[in-house]
Length: 492
Ligand SMILES: Nc1ncnc2c1ncn2[C@@H]1O[C@H](COP(=O)(O)OP(=O)(O)OP(=O)(O)O)[C@@H](O)[C@H]1O
Image 1 (cartoon, rainbow, N blue to C red):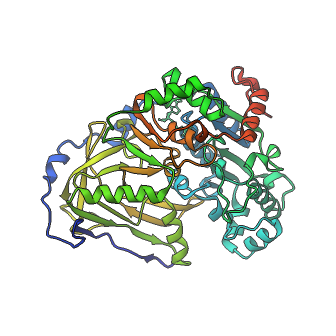
Image 2 (cartoon, rainbow, N blue to C red):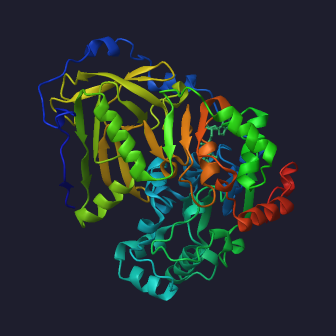
């Protein structure tokens, strides 16, 4: 085994207005923030955390998974799909042993969030051929991929809405061929999660004719259970839930939309709100300009990436697809967002926003960065925390094949709607003028907990696009499911 390292964490400080590096800025006292450190043990902290009360729907999924069923879990944004998935992964690892459970997601960001790998990297796909035989040929040349396909007993796929039907069918074909088991997916227990009303698949080759995964020929044969979670946790205001449901299904009427516009067009914008844009290039521009405008000395954190043998380029690509950038440049006053769950019960979770109020010197050098400066973030929830570097593994099954160590923060004056899928935001200022495609408006609006947390612009009725095929899929699912009577709550 060869280990490579292609970066070191350096804390450089530079004046953004001049772009040159300057002498040290002044930083706060290190001890001041550690005095408040929670001195309780991990066990005590775990006991103090409120235990989650699973709903009957969630329990029925857990029970089906325990019995070895393949399940498709869907539901509106905020119905606890990701939370449930975390529990399911634990369960699957107990059932099949860790090394036979592979956790994947359609995008790098989603894969990082669930400590998994992308579906493409699990499958060993590097091209985007529609021909299943060609795909299989490619995979047959990849010894490690063959090994994964033969070893896997449970396969998790998160954010299925972004997986194309052809890929879904092709992977089922590959599984059957490589495992030599004449069952759908070669007998693998599948756990597939996602909401087709959110962002749709993006084809690698940009070709037309995208199809949703539920349109795959093998879709219905792939599952013993398909269930729609109906209890929404992220929002509690019934009017807001009703509005979001209308937008989700493309059924909002004039009254709904006027109400939404009236409620969400703020005259004074809240500086703590995250600005959401459809396009990444606008996001980067806004963040860079805001950072520059502070005219402060900035600290640049460069990730420490390491990985096992094979091509360094390959893992670097996977790590770069995740949400944590190779370089994070911040300064005092910068608006930042946590990109990792640090203390869930204190609200310091992926998506929590705050402001950098200073830096402290890491006294003992830590294990990553000598002479490093750690940012102190005052979160909008009121909590103040020194942020230390965290690790993000790229997993293949239960094996860590590459790791990125980086400060778990990104600039958060602005974010792309694609990047915020899956997050809960405290406040959002959403510019929908460039919104395109189905599900984008719903994905953006459903990030916040209440109407008061929303500030909308560029919103017109035409921006709300819901795909008819998706609406039909959910109507069929609802017809066949009776979520009130859990004995009949699914297609079986
Ligand atoms: N049974 C439950 N009881 C209380 N809170 C829950 C429960 N299940 C989930 N939650 C909470 O609901 C919130 C939303 O959950 P989660 O992010 O898993 O939703 P989601 O369906 O994955 O949303 P999205 O589609 O936007 O990614 C989280 O704060 C989560 O902790």
